[in-house]
Length: 226
Image 1 (cartoon, rainbow, N blue to C red):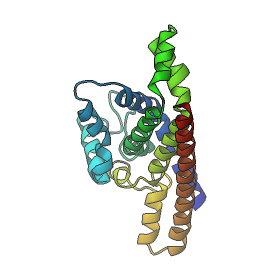
Image 2: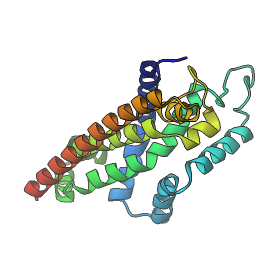
Image 3: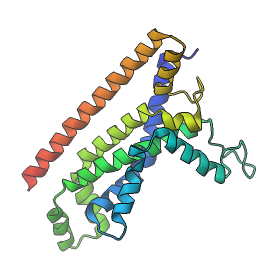
Image 4: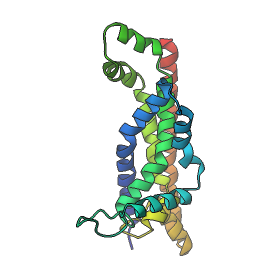
């Protein structure tokens, strides 16, 4: 049987990789929703938020259907191993999809705290839109973006429903912290379930506390600049 340590380390690795996957697209979508007006903006915002309100198992089934239509469920496709079902790749995909909404919403708030007048000043100095973004917007929103990454990481750490649907719950292969708690409880191993629960509580509390602190710092600095 796999140790608690191995389960936790593997879950941390998958959660971290999920944040890496969503980081750039999440920032792009958050900035777009925060700063730009365009037709269908509310539709885009609703679609991004949808995984937050859907049952995770429904999201997992949707992903399963999408992958099946593209032939990504079998062990080989066109001679290459593109399989996703019941692999660590499925865990990362499920965690990324479920973490994306909370990342975008938090990052959007971070960009909202940046005074648009500072960006306009950069443009009047002849800076391009890209340079304004990287030199002004991104640094000023950095604390909020770190908070977004931490919340996305926490959401990935706790993901269960979508992951079980497309990755299963295979010890040593696709079992995460959340699914390990479920398995331990189902087999009556209260000691392991309690130990895993404490790990989840400590990690979750540390992340939420850090994000609250970062958010307060971001708001205070934004207030001073205004």
